[in-house]
Length: 437
Image (cartoon, rainbow, N blue to C red):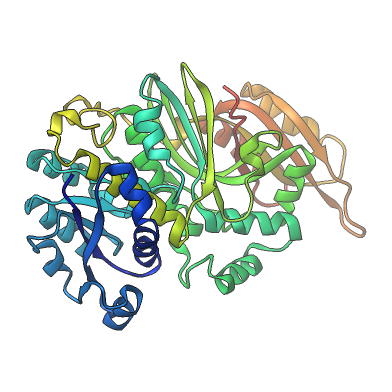
């Protein structure tokens, strides 16, 4: 096998990890593929950092286009991130006949359809294991390991920042804002944490997984996204009293009406393995018709865990570089001309169980009014907590768990409940998934 020559765009956290892993494990990699993988050029705006990490062993430049236009480079590894310059670089690399490895979930979720079409026309590989769940090989599992199955649903904790925050809120009883500051201090959260805490990062990753699972084009713009900023430690505590934990889940299901594509806080029974994934770790459950539920767990971010996935993609390319495009696994598991443009269901049409918390006057008849509204709309109650009023207060919390119903029906019930004279303010609504079938 000829040596695989790599051009690296970005040598920050993941890029530095990639360089380290390739250098440290060079002999182990060579034993697996019968040849070498070598980084021959690195582009980064911080030339001093690039020279420091590479020890002067590699050509460095601050011009990323010099790498994608370098005739010696066989594979471009894009670790810059973002939607704009990264897209230009990836498309230029493809146009130049180079394979691409990327960890850029935002780029693929938004522009993946265009990128994969261009790569197919040029006959080059675009590999992206590191784009979802860091070091967990979930892309390979969905695309190859489970290829005998009809995938029924995918549900995952795919953002370590939010999982760390929710774990701390539960364990320490702290408010969201306080834990966010701690997460930023520890480096788990960015100075601007919007993409993480509002669920956008998770929606990017879910879009990619859903496309592979169900053979559909990328449809990020159709994803429903709800973050964790409004969650309270009080709700986390009540959920725990009822035997549940709250996680930010990305959920995609294939139904007769279309595909669900949604990210939001979710109650999960605490007996489920995924409910016990804490800290900054990630986990994904995939339900196939033949295999049943399978769980994939590990580090979803970090220099070397993510680099592990990047280098694994390079190993695959090294093995496949002499093969024709027809012999390779399709980018998204299904041949591009076999993708089905299934509709994404609006959140109002989704079916789920629900956690409701309402603040009600402590007087007779309130619960009867609430339960009648639910019964009239054929919403079945699964469990209930009624708290005693705090000393000196005339109102108390009532917590209700419901069986599965359609979201728009639940919203109609909530509007009626909030209109009751005994109800103070807006209800809190959190979706509930059992992940058992």
